[in-house]
Length: 169
Image 1 (tube, helix red, strand yellow):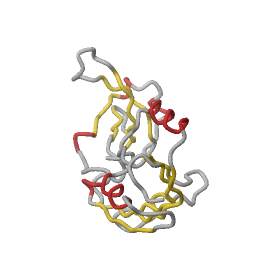
Image 2 (cartoon, rainbow, N blue to C red):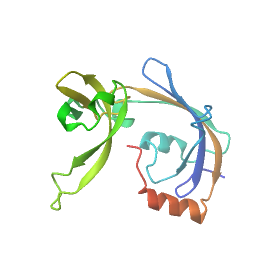
Image 3 (cartoon, rainbow, N blue to C red):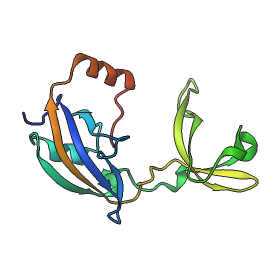
Image 4 (cartoon, rainbow, N blue to C red):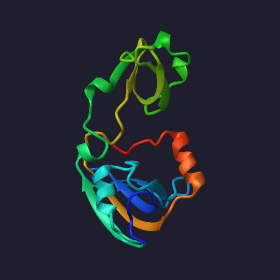
């Protein structure tokens, strides 16, 4: 069966950073193969386009520019938060990922939403958080092999609807 829009695809993969270092691999037990619904932009568009029409067992290596992968590095995604605003400021460590509530300034209702940010600097007065993906601004290489191609079950479709169908770019 060839990969086309609406089919569930399972990929065995390796993700390498700009230096060629392994960042993530489906071979690790805690990660496992990546499943995505083709055509819904659940993975980077350039990768999805390269997989179109491929079949079970197909392998490819694709290097993506920052704009095609995790985006350019955005210096405005760095924020200083006074330690007084942090409930557990003493428990935070550099490199740790934390969930932060952000006020949506563009919404008429002033709705809040949750984002994950990485702690990049600590001092006595403030905590500096970075909202960029760790690979933002870098070329990355995907090495993938198609492990399965099939129609999704009704339950798999329902789960994606409940999750909000997060996109890959």
